[in-house]
Image (cartoon, rainbow, N blue to C red; front, side):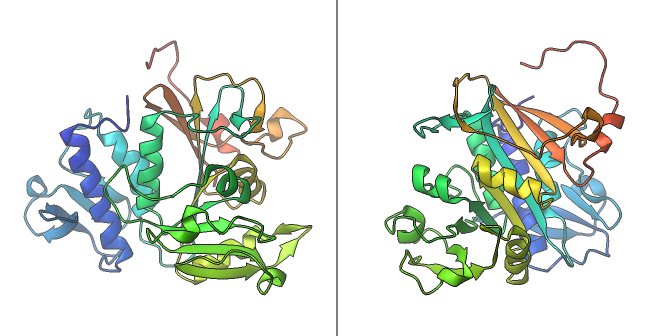
Length: 323
């Protein structure tokens, strides 16, 4: 099933998800009170509480179970949109939520050796990235991704507000003419070693320059995540590249990891996901997993909060073609 199918059902469901996200992030939802909501018509998707029965509500909030759709039958393929994205719309009274994504080839490359990465995955996975940005407080990429791809990190392909763009540049060596530093599409936070705050280097036209300490020659990612959460960016989406996502995984900071596998053989290039080495298979990271087809790509959605519980899963037996 294609989680990004552009049908009227999918468009309305995405509007519901955006409405839930905006309601939660505005602080208008009391997480301790159950409520039913309908989609309010208008230029921006919004939810309004309804007191009638569930037949008039499109989505329901439960303090115990979270968000639940009420308007689509269980077999509706578009419901996979809700299953994939509504976890980002949960109220957060404390802490933070870190999602990460990598799109890579079958032979685990995110780009060729010369840096060509546009695009490893297809249009459906790109639309997924834009949806993830729309539901996040911030979207983060590392130095190499910013330097080689010059990404915009906006929500051009879907409805939804742009997230704050976080760029890691420990030594402040990125070019000052990158789009994230010069456009007015969204705020950009440039994060460097705190000892380099006064050094020469790029400064975002719109946003801020932020310093964090380093450990063993690298930015202290735990301090980074906690710092931006304290500043209000509590839903953090790590979009790339391979070294950056792998570093957050190795630090145990990723709550949910998404890896999109494209039917592509690059034959060597920039490495994709590189988790910590396991000495024995029983010690390998094996989290619970859900699979989604996105065009020709397959997305693995991994619950990294339970890194050993995936072996207890009982997947369907037998052989089944999904594409």
